[in-house]
Image: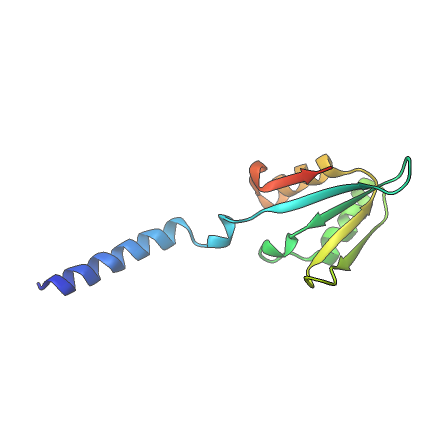
Length: 116
């Protein structure tokens, strides 16, 4: 067995093991931002951004579920600068949304950042 054959075989085995451990490299860089803004003195708005990183994420189904579960109005909007979709909810629901994403989509607690 020549040196090149050995290196090729070693690289193939290493790549297979690496791919088995990390099937999707996007899971390593997954960060979801939840932003809470004050609209009036009493009224708040919650934005959930970067949800497109989750595989098979359906904005309409999640939006409808959150409307019913949190008893608030919400909409799906698109950022004009980045063309990314986000969900806008009426009220301060940052902790509830974080718990929902952790339980349903198995996202790490450290991957979800609440701003505001």
